[in-house]
Amino acid sequence: MRWSVDQISMKFKSALRKSPLPPEQQQELHYHSLRHSFATLLLQKGVPMYTVSRMLGHSSVTTTEIYSYAVPNSFGEQLDKLTL
Image 1 (cartoon, rainbow, N blue to C red):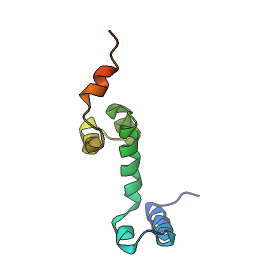
Image 2 (cartoon, one colour):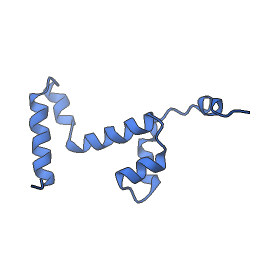
Image 3 (cartoon, rainbow, N blue to C red):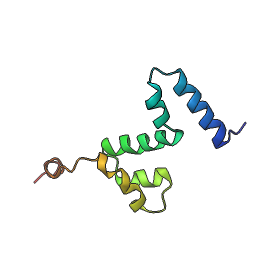
C-alpha cells in the first residue's frame, strides 16, 4: 500500500500529539521538518554538501546551501586534516 503525502502528514501530526512536546512546539513542526533535520545532521557529521544535495534530490547544490548554517566554519579543523 502506498501512502499519500496527506496520509503521512496526518500520521506525523498524530504522533506529535502523543509526544511530550508542548502544543506550541508541536504546531511549529511539520513532516517536512524531518527532511530538514536529516540534511542538517548529515552536514554536521561531515557529509559533503554535494552528497547531501544528491540524497535530497536537489537539482543544484545551491538549494542545499540553505542548510550550511549547520556546518561550523572551522578552517583550522580542516587544515589539521592535512598531513605534510
